[in-house]
Image (tube, rainbow, N blue to C red):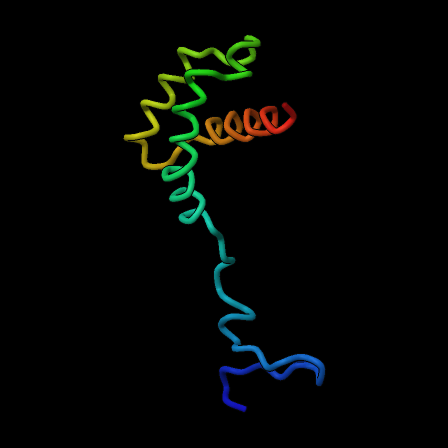
Length: 95
């Protein structure tokens, strides 16, 4: 086998060394960020009009609206917006 391929057990296929033991762990942050900007922020826009969390007083609607406006120009969407979106979506799924 070439020097790129790692020997493995008989029941496994050979693996390319740089894939099986890469120098950096793989992450999907860019994919998550793109998805959040493409799909999450539009959901947040509709959520600002009618939110369970805002209606029940758990989230300040004005602060959420400001955070949403700031997210457009931020290099990374704040984690807190992700948390609010996830919780709101979970609550809505129970209705």
